[in-house]
Amino acid sequence: MPKYLLIMRGTDETNAAMMASLDEMMARTHRFIEDMMKAEVLVAAEGLDDPGQGVVVDFSGEAPLVTDGPYGETRELFGGYFLLDVATRQEAVEWATRVPAVRGSKIEVRRVAEADEVPPGSESNGQV
Image (tube, rainbow, N blue to C red):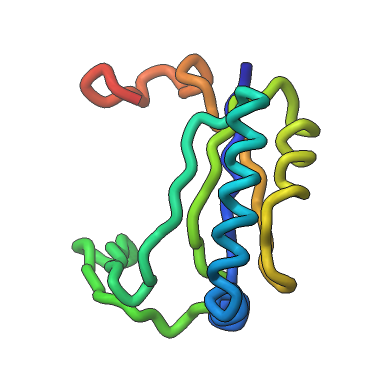
């Protein structure tokens, strides 16, 4: 079955709203994860640390430039993900509509490419 990544996207405002009701959000998220486990579709789920703790490696110039966070552009932050093993995109979308989220946040649904979909000659040391 194909895998789909549900990418949690938020803003400074939605992250603040989530933090204001963190206990409730954590309880709802725990129930959501239990539902996915019962349905045997959950492969992985992780939340990410504060973006101010991260770095960006920018390949725009001659050499990679490493910049510490926080970042000037925080309109949409990648806050975490759920990786699902489901039969169809529609099933992934149905799960995405059930993600506990605050108003204003978004969930991006992306299919994970299978190893045989990588163009020939693009493998590196036998790894994809």
